[in-house]
Length: 370
Ligand SMILES: Cc1ncc(COP(=O)(O)O)c(C=O)c1O
Image 1: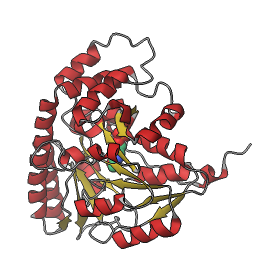
Image 2: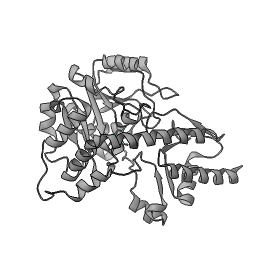
Image 3: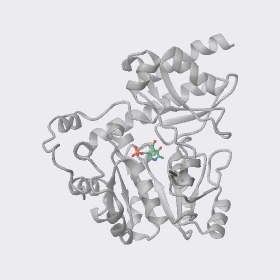
């Protein structure tokens, strides 16, 4: 018996572990773990969301395959007609769906690493030719290289996280405009856009979501995982040009968004004022976290427009720092062993008490090292 050869040889995705698994592994209660490794929203769902979940009426009935109520609520929230919107089990599902409907084996997909690992993973899973156009040293996009790659290799898709994960940078408006003129379908992954605007208007002035209906080659992906603290429920959405919608409807799993996820997302959108407050708290904490971490001589921080900070570490191995924080203090941060990031740590923005626990742990660790 033989599975498909390209899947047998591809490297697995390394997912992040949930509280209960970490708790057992570290021998710490979940509330003694500070989880800053997966860019989750530490405040958890709004009270109205918890209530909606507790009162779910039709769990025994399959969900609406068209997620009508949810898409209507999203349409009002982003100001785009629901005919352009498809909901998914997280933005992750929609990344894979796009690849499945576009890619024949060997077709090109452009990614700009270091970036979110699922583009590469899903590209390989779909037997695509994943074309890397690396970012510059400061994680900005290499526009000439991108232009050249698109013109030479004629990729079907180009994936771009705006802001980018893991560094939090956002391309300039001029760069994005230029990218949108390239002859390929551009997928802007706005998973963190709500954190990008310090004015606290949920990233509305920066999002490209309203341009989707005016262009044929733009897709925007969004998620409730970060904005509404619903990562565990798996719910996100994409905004697509009209010509693509019939194909997506045909190809998606019929009941891809479950009733709990849908009810939770709708309840969250009904209280968008509270979402703004939560996002503002995280933006303020990002600033405090960045200012305090910048005082440690061994850290070099990258400016971030998202709910995490990437920093370069000197004087101690980044992997060792991650390990010490985890084993001795129950503080989880993200380490990537890839050549470009092997001396970096990514820290999700938590609550003020989470940052304080981190500062204290760092002070103790560095008191020993120096
Ligand atoms: C850039 C980016 N896009 C998408 C996702 C996944 O979103 P979702 O939870 O909606 O699948 C993440 C999660 O970390 C991410 O970093």
